[in-house]
Image: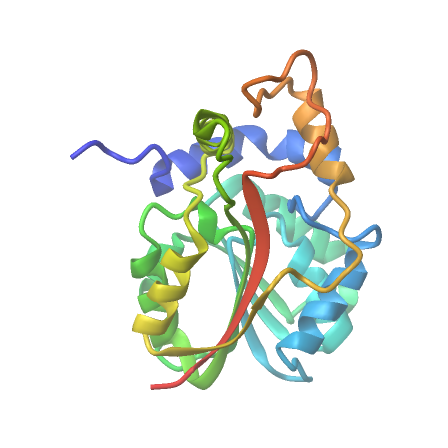
Length: 260
């Protein structure tokens, strides 16, 4: 069997090299679907998963800690921010130190989210969140099973990610090219949404909702990043990237609770 291109080792190498470039374009939140003010998005997420003071949250695939800082400051929660990149851990701690009121509320850790039980006890977290990070997994079923173990009974799983969109009936190669190029250039494995839903439900979760995030969506930072680094994502693309619609991708959120 061919080895997947997005192994944990490959993702680590990717982010060790590319994190400075992400910071230049995205700031401290490495997500394509954002809001103009990133804080608005994390306020929305906290409302969706009913965060309240003192809860323990795992941010799986935490980048340099930007989402953790927003959530901890908005909701007074304790966050484990897990990233595969040692460079991101170091940068995250620098950012946390600048927000002195959050010291003790956020812990950055280098680790692989396929091995959560190597780092955390069972029944540790009230919520686990994935912000466009599960798409880096070479085997989401392993990840979700690990999540099931570290979540408390009836805990919440929130996934916001990109999924395969509809085929173009006039030229299926158009969609295939775009998805393959996105996977290769961003070290991803974009999957059909149904595959992730099946994985979540088989692991014992009950899906509460599945939808496009109900926010004023903004893709400007992602478009700027793609254009700046001369990435070709469309078969018919000539010159730098311009946002002409990612018809081959859907950004969706999945909210679920641990049922059994």
